[in-house]
Amino acid sequence: MTKKIIKGRLFTLACLIMALPSSGQGLVSTYEKSNHLETSTYEEGMAFFHALAEKHPEVQLIEEGPTDSGYPLNVVLISRSKNFDIQQLKNEGKAVFLINNAIHAGEPDGVEASQMLARDLLENKKMSRLLDNTVIAIIPFYNIGGVLNRNSGSRVNQNGPKEYGFRGNARNFDLNRDFIKTDTRNARSFSELFQKLDPDLFVDTHVSNGADYQYVATTIATQNDKLGGPLADYMKKEMLPFHYEFMKEAGTEMTPYVNIWGMSTPDMDYSEFIDLPRYSSGYAALFNTIGFISETHMLKTFEQRVEATYNYLLGLITFTNTNGKEIINLRNETKRQIAEQKEFVVSWKLNDKECDSILFKGYEAERPVSEITGQVRLKYDRARPYEKKIAYYNHYDPDVTVSRPDYYVVPKGQWPVIERLKWNNIEMEVVKEAREITVEVYHIVSFKTQEQPFEGHYMHYDVEVEARKELVQLEPGDLLVPVNQWRNRYIVETLEPQASDSFFNWNFFDTILQRKEGFSAYVFEDLALEILEQHPEIKEALEVKKKEDIEFAQNGYAQLMFIYEHSNHNEKAYMRYPIYRYLKQ
Ligand SMILES: [Zn+2]
Image 1 (cartoon, protein in one colour):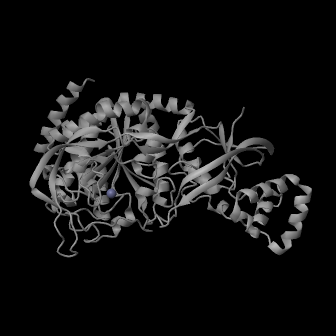
Image 2 (cartoon, rainbow, N blue to C red):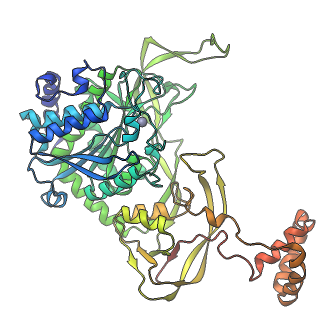
Image 3 (spheres, helix red, strand yellow):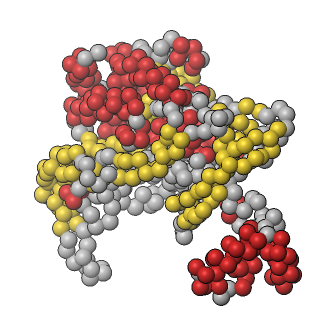
């Protein structure tokens, strides 16, 4: 399909959308009934989709596991052939498009856009063509607990709707940080759904905070270098240009997500957001799914934002329906490559030299003195719009790269890790008989820990490890995770401690970071003397260290600890990462 043909379709569709008398389309949403001022409650939104499913056999509602709210995770499937067997649909070559809404329940633009879009795709003959090659799955409300917790104040800077939900879920977790650690039932059910659908395209809908500018819509496309391979190329060269053009033609021009905070303004240049695996689109990238995040601007009206989100979703569905086969082929090719890939980048750093130049439509900023604080404040002047070329830093370089082992060994006691691997459909081999094998064991040399709690955790970072060859005993029931799967990225980026969102960094193994036993110095003193007599090599190492390190030479307890650590009394589990790397030869 050439770009020209795609464009032709684009114009027709954009005109079509503008002309849609949405209230004349049968089912009417809360948003439409309220003159675009209100968003649906959980009950109203679900009633809308139930009514849609009753009217149209192309719609099926399913419940995918529990959420922390006590309500199930609801999913709306739209399949023109009325077949809802995902595997069969995939075998027929249908592309699967997953839309997630209300992960931040105070940002309900996608909740409303999805209701109208689902209805219009079914009831508008011309639009229904978009279902020819695409199956659509919509999560009407992901953070149901947050949606039920309605208020009118928590989105302090947001211009409507009248009432909305709260960002935290039923247990006050931010679900858009939970995709790896999976503290919530929401995230667990999402993982299971995601693996069943294995979507070709994924969108998570949001409303943005931060700087002021002219655009209603901004977009996060999953970070290109991090997505990598032929898919990244395709996204950059084909998909994004189409999407930007579609949004412009539809009257809702968009710009890359404005990653600007505090006193900075967009004309000071900005950098691309890196969507780590903890975020929805970063999680999707681990499974070679092209992920997008729509971010409408908080200061625009609810009506403007819902319209922009509607166009955003429509643009991507339009592209997918026309180019689904190519996306599927590229994904299959990527899956093959990932299964054979030997090296994996597990941490990225911004390249502060390479940038793209983009034409940005902003507002001039002033920095007057605050009437309240007497300090300089930031103020945008909407009477002074501008168009300026700005530098957009959108390249990331590998920071930490690891080579894959043939297998990771996960002892059966590490059930929180095993559960997560299962929820993500990772293939594992169960050890049948006890045997000894030589593996690579990481010893944690150093790490840093955040001082403030973050999403129920004190996260680690800057982890240094030393790999040692050790003989370990495999027990029946232990698990071997072969690293030859198309889901390799999930395996490596959770199990390698140095990965940005590793299970190690998310505190799954904090019990190894403290000693469980110890010694009483006055008792150990005599034993230590015997150890030194029996082990001249320890004695020599002690003398060397005393000469090199004056503080050590003056610290009796540190010297006893040194002997203890070098003796066979030393606690083996301390700082020893309990997931091993098995390299066959
Ligand atoms: Zn958000």
